[in-house]
Image 1 (spheres, rainbow, N blue to C red):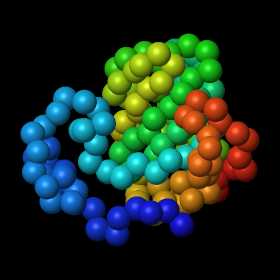
Image 2: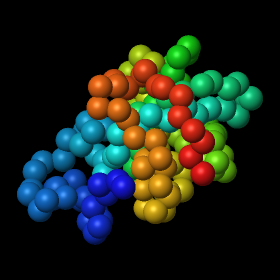
Image 3: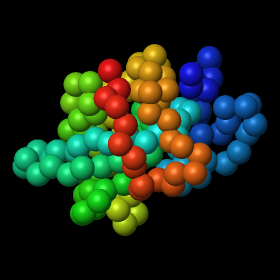
Amino acid sequence: MCDYPTQHKQNTGRETLDGEFRTMSKSPMERRTAFRAPTSIKATASSSQGARQDVEISDLSTGGCAVATARHPLASGGAYGLKISGLEILGVRTAWTSGNLAGLMFDRPLHVAVADHISARHPRPAEQEPGAAQDAEPCC
């Protein structure tokens, strides 16, 4: 079972999920509005030109995910199709990149129950760092 909060409160950039107020930061980590569950999921990112690249999803939320690539970094601001075993291809856009790491925003948010199911099926082992995926069974 995943530890998603049962009630989701929209983060306006001034009020945190626990009700504390702060100044809006420009950091991608600070702009997140949904809980991110640590995961270890192998997936494939495909560009509109047909280039495919294996990625590892290291955290997942209803609005996006963080991925690590094995070969080439994803293009900043690029549009991709993200294929996770057992799901339809998800449209994503690159929100940020740092070397072989990237933050992806889903074109259409996942339903909370879908994000819960995926993250429960593919939890990241406590000792595993992002970028070091292990084989996992298909999610759905």
